[in-house]
Structures are given as C-alpha cells and as structure tokens.
Image 1 (cartoon, one colour):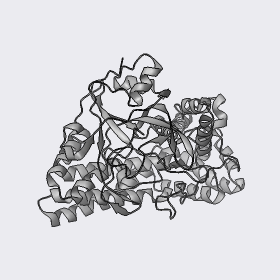
Image 2: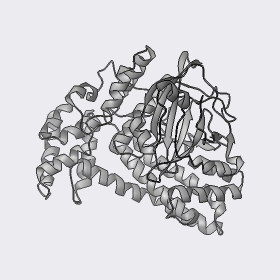
Image 3: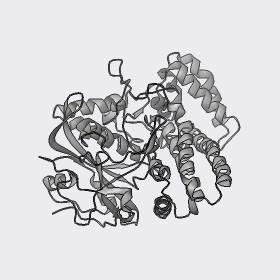
Length: 480
C-alpha cells in the first residue's frame, strides 16, 4: 500500500520553465524515524500500515499514483548578493494535496537527491538538519506561528559527506506552498512577463483570493510578513538567513537552517555561523523584511502598465511595512505584559523591560513566563541585580491596576501568550548528538514536550531551563 491522498497538482500545471520534472533518487535502506500522524490526519492522508511502507513513501522510493514530482526553480539575494539561479537543489516537490477543509498543501521531500539546481551539491541531507527542522518547525506550529510543518523524518541508510561522514536522512515538509520572493525575481530578471503574470495569478488564486492584481498581492504579502516577523520576535526567534529565496510568499516561516531561539536577551543576538556581520540579527529582522519586500515590489513592476506611477505607489507600500509591523509588534508586547487595553505609556514600559533584560542578561522566555505566574516578582531572580527590577515591577503593577480583567483571566491570557517551553538550542543539539549515537529517545521526548509549549508538565521542567555555561550554543549552522 502507498500513501492515499487527494492530490491536485496546480503548480505542475504551470509552464515547464517553472520547474524540472524528476523523481527522487532511490535510497538504499529507508527507515522511519518519525511520522506526524495528527498532521497526516489534518491533511486527509491515509498512511500505509507498516513503518517500512511509510519509510518507502517518505524516502521517495515509492510515490503515490497521483504525485507529480518536480524541483522548483527560483533566484534570490543571498546576504544581499544577487544569485540569478537557485532552485530546489536537494528537494523534490512530491505534489499538492487538498485537505478535507479545502486547504491546499505541498508535500516536499527535502534531501531527495540531485536536481539541475544542486550547484555541485549531492542533493542529500544529513540527520542533524533534518531533526533540527522537524523539532523547530513543529515547535513553531505549536506556538501558533505560521510555518512549514514536518510530516516525517526518514533515515536513508546511506552516508553523506560533510565535514565528516554523516548518516543521511530525508524530511517530508508540508507548506501552503514553496513559492518564494525569489521565484518572482527569477522570472523578472529574465523579463519573462508571461511567466511572471502566470505566477502572480497562481499565487493570488492560491493564497490571497481577495487581492486584485500585482498591487493587491504586494499589499497582502507585506501584511503577512509584518505579522510573521512580529510573532517571531515575540518568542525570541532568529531565522538566521533571511535571504529572498527563504521568504515565503504565503507568509510562513520556511527554511530552518541556522535558526535559533535566544536564551539571554540582547537585540543584536546572532547565532548563524554564516552571518558574520549580523545582517540577520534578532533586531534587524524587520528591516530585512522591508529589504526583501522591496525586491518583490521590483519584481512585480514589469506587470504594471505605468512603471513610474507603480514605482511611486510600490515604494509607498513597502515603506508602510514599518507601521504595519509596529502595530503587530506592539500588540505582541502588550499581550506579553498582560495589557488588554492600550495606553500611551505601554510601549515605554515594554521597551524599558527589554532594555533592562539586555543589561542584566535575563533569559527572554523565563522572564516573560515568570511574569505571567501568580508570583511575578520572582522574575527578578533571573536578573544579575534583582533589586534593579523592582522599580519596573512597581510601574507594571500600577499599570495593571487600570485593567478591568480579573486577575485570573489576565494570568491565563499571559500564560497562553508567553510559552514555558521553547526548543532551546542546547536541547536540540543534545537530541541530535544522541541520535547520531543511535538514541532517538531525546528527540522524541523533546518533540512531544514542545507540542504543548504553553502548558509544560513538571516532568519536562528540565527542558525549560536555560543552558549552563558548558551547554551554551553560540553558533548554529546551515543544513547543507
């Protein structure tokens, strides 16, 4: 038995220059590591009965009858430098499924072998990045942040060569689509107006049916990205590599490479080993989103009848991102502080806390989670100088006195906003290290715990702790 699903492969019906049709490269000895059965049910998938059969499907050795495998082409700016052709260098889009509620999703095999876009790469993935993306993307989904999802992780039974010989693996990724800003850039750079027009119509129909034309599409993507980045920052998430080929048109978090969650708060935090100058630091993410959206606007210009008027209008729209982001970010901050109604002094209160956290090297997640509890004053114990926090706590208490919600309701709302559990970098690395030794128990335990980040159990208390000095992870690495 193979995978049963309602396939309707709309991207495969676009012109051939959008992709290369090809099957995944077979692997020697696929073995199932994990399968996300709740997600499979949500997608309306009927999985094969045995783990071996599931592994055959999610390794690409056996494809569903209605699948139309292909590798997508796109371009992009990587760390600000233009690369005219990128594409799925190690991923194969198996096809699109229509869920029972009518929503459409891509099923993609990441690590499925060489494609015409591999650029001298082997097209494979090793176990570490596959487990990292599985853990972090599913954690982001549980946190309520738009994201690609992990449907399965499969060992290939083959080794891949990186800095050392590593076990190979494949991630089955689910996304609303895999269309990127770089997809638009690819066709705009080639002055392929026909393809650009077809892509725009496809994206509007698939993601933003309320949008009218290129201007409406740009407006919708700007709004989606403003909300997304604000929500990233609300949980201390740093994407790490916000290239235009890593920005989803659907407004989802995509491409978990050197991503990380902050422990101690500082606005200039960087983890990515390839981000040597801090281009994609935590606090820079809104500005980078603006830069990326300007590239999308530029790519859409050839579709506009009056280029000069469009440049003026698109510039105004992209510049308007800042106001839309600020609105979303300020709403996130108010919610994190338990403030249901807005007052003029709310933002200085929030920003003063962040400044104090940075100076005192306070843990981002623990600070807000403790503030959400019945004894918020205990928050000060996470600061190097606890007495320095008291004046701020007094201001916060005075502000809360003007709220109309009952105390119990406020605490419940804050605890539903401020997670008690995030995928701590050191815990992710520990899970990967154990898996490389053949022990998947830490991976499964961490994944299970992160499925309920706002209601962690006592048995998971150790997973919520910040790293010790020797556990601290200061650099994360790209999955290639």
